Image (tube, rainbow, N blue to C red; front, side, top):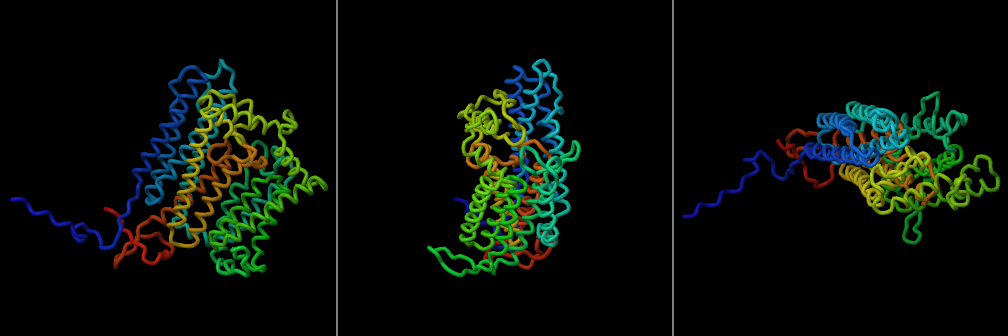
Length: 496
């Protein structure tokens, strides 16, 4: 006699509510990926020492272990303060940050005399400073998560953040060149041995303001006046905000002498505007305005000179860097030769010659790494960046409030655009810029600003993935008001 099949467990017997989807925090998955990332960083460090020193010192693992402890601390903060945040963001960023520290350590070894390389202190040089900056940046990100328990609280300070962003953008432009200019671009504030790049923080403040402004004005900006070739164009009187930001970006291009920063500010506004209105016409208008303004600056630089001359010179170098390969075009030419030397598979970690490439620790770190890991390795790094951008866009799609959607979407796009600007510059796709490669390049300003960007994405993704109970039970959601829910969307409960 066969036994009767056991009846299926009812929702009441499992403690679940009908029509309710269970949610998991995925923190253990984050921890596993984080450990894997640190193993890869340690393997990279060991390979560097094997190629540079012909041996692997007993201390090769210390930088990876130090980074692992720092990132583990942030993981615990996330587990406590943002338990439903995206589990892929921290490991992906930790891998990039670790590879950056490892390459800077490799750069220190290349600069040292051969007889001093094996005894070079782990925490010395550019690599040691980057470790310290990483600790400070991660602490800053953890502090932001502790202070900002709900991303919507940023909207209360939108106008203050917008004003602060404009001031931060303007400061380097109005300072004398000796206090703000490095390699032709006026992007810094330099006092003695201290320097900071305020534009890195300005992009976060301006983006929070853009998101708040466009949430309030998106209905007006979505109105169309006429259709041309199947594209609905906005009314003329609604072009004011775009023209203002366009003018600011041109002022940045002219007075700060940097195409990348100008493109970054204008691009993140136009894309945030597109996300808010879903009008392709805004993208077309933005592209026409930006490239038209850049061409106008180029023409004025060749005829009038003055503040436009620097951009004209950079454009000339971009058009033909081999015209003066040992003078003005030297940096770009060396970058192209370095990428060509790397080929498909590279010379191996520690097998390149990074000291031959000017500014390899900052502007050209992507080319320096590419010489050693080749096209395949660089493609893998770009995939990691793409993963971070994709997870940010996923958070933007899933979050329930409009401000969060624009904020997360704008932050994710801004990170991707910054990578495009620097990679496009070193590969001669666009003129060279003063931008740094996020999480890889040496420097505290870029590292801290981008870790703050990741902290905001973590907070938004926590709000997007945080479960909301159905039925008559209390809602398990962040404070700050009820989230907007899509009609018919399944609700979630925390799995015990």
